[in-house]
Amino acid sequence: MVNTDPADPAEGSGRRLLQRRFTARLLPQLRLLVEECAAREGLGEPRRGEFVLAVDEIAGNAVEHAGGSGRLVLRRIGDELECRISDTGPGFSEAVIPELLPGLDGAPKGRGLWLARLVADRFSVASGPAGTGMPGAEVTLAVRLR
Image 1 (cartoon, one colour):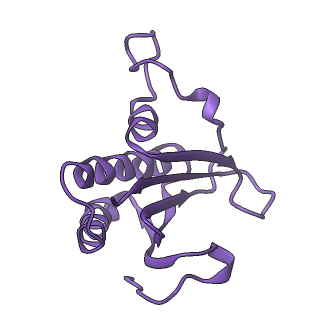
Image 2: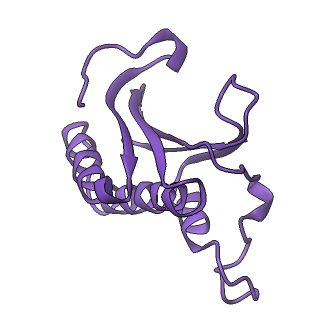
C-alpha cells in the first residue's frame, strides 16, 4: 500500500510514503516500490540504487533470519528518506555487524548489514519491535536527499 498521508503519530514525524508487510515472495515487488518512492522524492542515482540495495539486504535478512516475514515503513523526514524494517525474529545488536568487509575479517556473514550501515547517512538497530518488549529487531536506515 502506497500512502502519501502524514505518518501515524505512533510512527513519529514525517510523511509516510510506503508501508508494507513482506515475505520472500514479495521482496522483488518491495524493491520496485522502494525505488519508485525514492525516485519520486528526488533521490538521484547512484544514491538511489545504493539505498534500494541496502533496504533489500535488510528485508532479505528479516526473511532469512527472522521467521520469513517483516514490515517496512518508508518515510520522508525533512531532507531524509528513512526506512524502518522490523521483524519478530530473535533480535540482534549492532555489535554483530563487522567493521571490515565480511570475508576480510574472517566473518562468513554480515555483508548486507555491513553494506547498509556503509550506505546510510543514519543507521541504527533496536532489539525488539518498538514498544512491545518482545523479541525481534528494528533496523532504521536513512539517506539525505540533498
